[in-house]
Image (cartoon, rainbow, N blue to C red):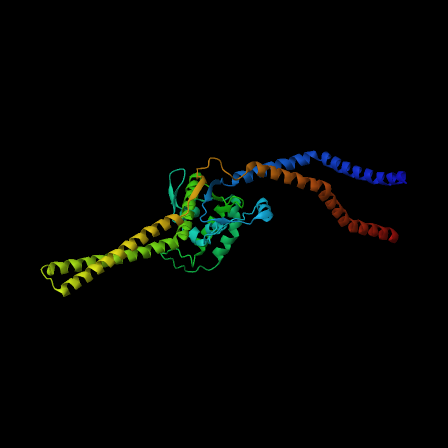
Length: 385
């Protein structure tokens, strides 16, 4: 039985080996064509690689500070979650903006529009606002203009509508123009923020076609993000400080007025020894003492509110500061070249193995009806003769 099975299996394996060898031989016999297609892949890859503008990326890493005592999932569940890459600790302080929400803040419309007026400087020393730089200085590959050509033609064919352009137009986050929305989308693609789930380190990347602009914009994004988080975290404490300072100013004014009333009364009644004069003087002195105590208490509250603002102000450690990148991060010319050559070889192999035979079969099927009709015509002619 074993011999029979081996005999049954051998022909199949031999057929498979023969088929593979036949395919390899067929490809080797057309090696010149494969070489030509590979050369075309090299040319295509070089054209694509050198047509894409260079992009420079600046990376900044921040480590936020946590306020309050932390509590985490204890036991084996916490260990398993940590191994899976999830941070199980949560701050007990009331803070709705966790590091996991920082990417949403950076990609929000208000944050993007706040960067429009930021002044950046390119490597040649020219100054632009971010809005002007994205509008006039960003270049695209040559095929981008070809792809936009149909839209431009359609735009020319449409009837022109009168646009009411206000010279004093100010950006409104509630209602953006089409141009402003396009700029927000472009910034969202060029500025990204990610959070390491294990360490909660914030990673901010900015990608621009000029290395100096990329570094300046990255530093500005970090400063704006810190300002936004600081404003949120200290908002309650700053409001308490403003209220304490208001009470302190009122108490100070009341204390000075009570002191002035007591001094005026003492000046006018220096030689009076009546009981009424003594009672009035004691009353004014008590009012001045109460006003002083209130003023002293509100001054202490102001100092406590100031310390509270300082306590709630978050501190960020910059692990990787913004530096001007030296080498471009894209395009990856070697990868593009290798991909184009690989696709060309695969396409050529598919044509040799399958495409050419399919075309030949199609041509044969198309010729059969014509040949049959010619044979029938000759037979009919011979019979008549």
